Image (cartoon, rainbow, N blue to C red; front, side):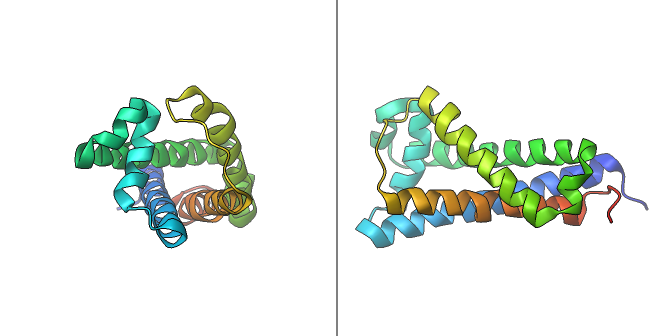
Length: 159
């Protein structure tokens, strides 16, 4: 049975979004644990703090799970935006590495300069190492996997 556009797009969104979410959460869990012994639950609570503010850090497993769900939803939204954009912009599918890295750059800018400043996250001044890790993670662990999943599963013309 041939794949429909909707089925293929949904698969690209789910695979790209889930892969990006998993890779993108493993990065700070590993990075901050190795850097200063930060417990993984704190990473997830910091995501929840975007919605709940400082109270997220005293909510235990409950707020960590909220952070995990938010993280997954955000990754799925970014994957959806890319897959839908690729329908109109063939470049995104034809050049997956270049477009994935460019998309990662866009995600980094939007998240750090638009979304986070308007959330309840406590502003911080990250060190150069944290900033570089954050940029590279978004480029290679979010933008690139979303683009590659789109390339693999999207039913669009390829050259």
